[in-house]
Image: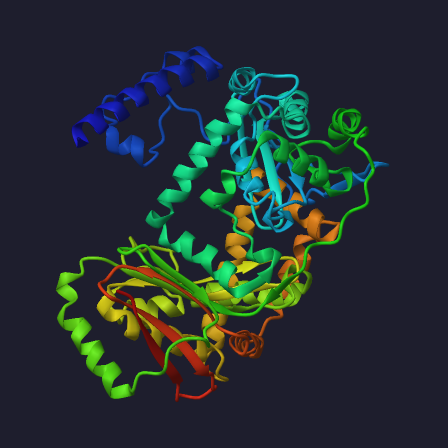
Length: 554
């Protein structure tokens, strides 16, 4: 290996010497000078003076040196134009050769009715299918022809359609994107094909316990619009048809609820292309957002039996005495080897205010970074969250925990925060106790020190700033902020709010969160029983008062 490297260096030295002598010679003597035979590889590597190579400060003929990069580059400003009918067009420029364009709709599963339940999930699957102007095959060919990439995604409150490609193709990108969103054809055979795919996707949900529990937390914890499932139920999707989808799009995809956002595109250019394509949308008043009320609740599903329960945490069987519970705990450990499966659970609480309470939304984001967590197996290394509280205090101390992490979901006016865990059935009670104690710990004054808070704040900053380097994420940030706030708040505003967070802010926020009703969701395997945690009292001291209740299923 070293010999091969040495050979390459020698050949490179010879080529450089010959080219340098030919290009930079100014006299016969310089042109005819040859490298000394006594000068070896070592002399060349240490830059020993040689008449065959020009000095580094020798100007190169015909080469113009570019101006130095300035110490400060003014960041690109987001420009927003509102059309007469209410459509908002926003963009920011970038020197990059690529562009990301997205059409953002203020419409998610919260706007579904019993008749249209599951429509947003199906619309996501039907994105970029046949329109009134193009067949699905033509759409695929047009995207492939310019090396583009299209995606669609849906959330509880918004729908997103994006197109990424080289910025030289911006006119084609904008026209195709708007055509796919405004003029879907909803051919019966395409709808039926996607319905079957949605059914298969729902059936595979048990292979993604974390996603299943997040859905369950919303359906059990909220009353109202946020309880609508993001993933369509099989019974609901069977009732959907082309007619229902057309009615849903006509009702919700209106001008006042649309934002066209782009990153890497000049605003005047984007406006000149998009305005003729969007200005004829009818001006319809924006409807009031459907209401949601957080109530707390319980969802339990036993995977091996397919039995699920959803109800309030306070409506179950009588409490089992502590001694009986401890005996049962040891028995479950004894037969653990018979259960080669996993049990997953999530504990969640309400975050009132949502995105519209910007300071608290920022605090909860830092709190999640501070608690962190992840899987028991990690390759480690910088940026993996190995110094978060749940890694240091939980995963490093409990080898039987397969996953343990904090999560949050923030919406316009509310949100949830909690802990997700995965372990073997015999360790569930311990894992529940650990989760409860960790939540109480961050809610106790003096338990969060300045060092770990500074680390969490720095981690939040780096993740945010590095993500915004991506064109697609920057475009999404523009679109979603305009839908939520009506503007894009400057990055400096977020960073200033983040810098002002103190340990007391973290403690106060944690106390506020866990004082709300508890929502618990569990999914797992194991014969005959499901373990459910009911927290009867949360006290901010070292004495955790919990009641565990056992529900037997035959």
